[in-house]
Length: 174
Image (cartoon, rainbow, N blue to C red; front, side):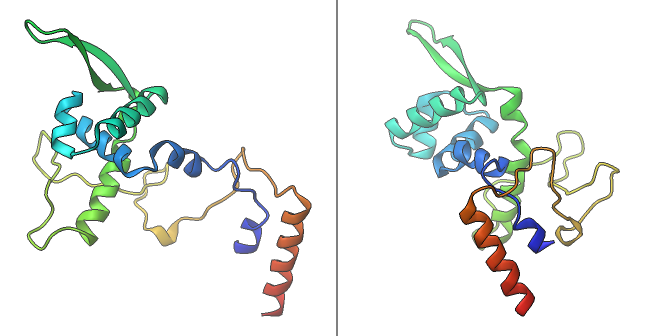
């Protein structure tokens, strides 16, 4: 499988594209805040200590990519302002944040434990992300095989092909 994977181009990788949107620390922190119900700029800035311009930029990026939408609100006697609400595209990221939280809780939590626990509203049990195939089988990572999808692209540049041929020749010698 490894040699075959070396013939695929990674230029249109959807993980790479997702990281272009989400890859900065503060972007995921902003999403975390909106998921826990913090929707207003000043509340986010106070809770997270994100510099004003950084927060402005991250919110604009999330709106531009359709993960958040602006919604006007007005406190009595104040001007109209905007808060940020998750779109369906943003809500679809929740399992990703839960997976990141699970990993962080396992490897990076303080000795006292994680700072937040997410529970199921109906039964109260802790929520986790599971890896499942479309048939419903629960999987572990070593049971998963990457395969080319309909959008896969072959390596196309002469340098790509040359590098691939060198790698294959080296693997044959070993």
